[in-house]
Length: 457
Image (tube, rainbow, N blue to C red):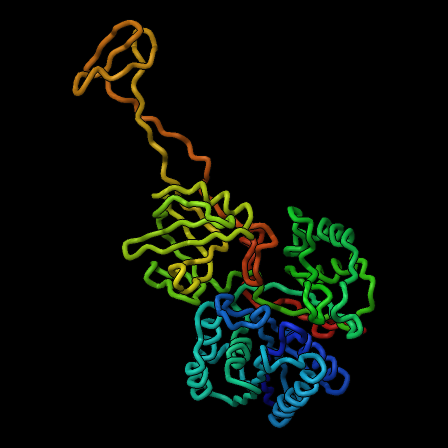
């Protein structure tokens, strides 16, 4: 019996006023678990795409479900069932999707790892600008059974195909445990005890990610919009996330708890480029260059500087929400060698193209060299110039010398080589915290518990 791998991708089901792609997929899974004998081969995959794209949805995230079956007709049934479920979901949760959303679903039967074109497209969508024309070409050229559905335009298919193709087999990943609210609580204050969040962070901070901003005294696991999410805990392993959840004091009834495997906090969006010629709008990049201008603080608290290489000069902006990262950047001097990471903002009538800095790697700092008048060898007093090409004289003991020259002094820099990041509140979905360095994963989970990833209340 030949088993078929079914990959179903979903995108753009969320809107600013309600609905959520992960929520839709979670409810769909709930229905399938109740009514169908589904055989999942992975956790639901939450794939965040290029954050530099201006028309992205709330978190620019798409979701893929991966199942296996021996019946191709059953695979198509899953796809068609998802489309029917989407119609009912939009009517109930995303009534204004026509203004902001672009709901789309696609299915690919086969192993995406073996499809080089799909793999290339999914990786490119993490850091680059994808055109509708490219999407159409990919759909025409992909080998294997592919079907797709969209309600407005094919833009939503970018996320669908990307989530299908980005398998996270040989790449880094994390997990997010998402707790969903009951519908009657949508739009109300989220009832989670803040002290319990602090306790959870104290107990599990080593293996969870960005739970609390202590500088601003603000929980980071709780969103603020009208969406169905009560909270989300991110971390390295599902078991740890459930243990962390058990510490929280939640003061409202729950609907669903689902664990997603995700590329969040992996820096998957940062394309390593060779030089500044490869910097262009709507890209997310990391590039080494030399500091060209002394950083300056602008009105509003933003910090501006420039970097250069043998080919061009590029502006760098460090915005006020990055907090103390601006203080680090202000210590840079022209000649320092750095690696900058961030998304590229297009030019406008007010400013040139620039990289919005996410974090910075100071590779080398140029020493500050000053030349001082020598001290008198007779009495130790600092000497003064005796005139052009006449050496130095001591005003105290009258000693003179043409042989003594200025003393070279190297002033130690306050800024040291190393990695520097912003405070927790400034992190976006894909940005990797320094504490995750050297903890990257590079293989499929050794333990996969398909029955444990969802808790239905």
